[in-house]
Image (cartoon, rainbow, N blue to C red):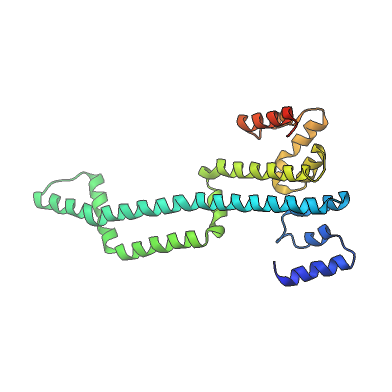
Length: 239
């Protein structure tokens, strides 16, 4: 965070603005969960405790981001390795078969002809293709944060994205509950955050008398394993 922004926050607090309201002016630097937790802690006089929870939350988010980056980086490297192996096969192995077919004057099937033609084209431009593969791989690894959003939108990444959102939802709910809010108040606070609005019906079910487990089951947003954990937490009094 730039020193200019820190100085601005200090100046605003000295002028009588609340800490949370001041942080809200810089939501590009501060997570909405962080701002909301501080706003609640200011009312309950639990700011020190809330800040400790925020530190744990941010560390958890950083660890999650690191795991996601590693998960995305691995298939990129595997794909690059596969492309290199395919290129080696096309540039050095297939031409040897081509010369054998020519020497023996063998008529090859159409599919084989297409493969041999592709091999010939790739051989002519092998250095350009190799350079493009290297540049693409380096770009994907160095600028992973820029392309991560695009990769996560791919259909094959759908389940991973859902699990990321659910992990963040549960972590955010946990930090709200630690801020001395009850379950309904915590969920209502989370409903103000756009990425969690798909869970908005849960709080309505709880208000109608359902337990968290029952509300979560009806919402159909969670797997059987996740619902089992919620049920166990409720039964043990630690949900």
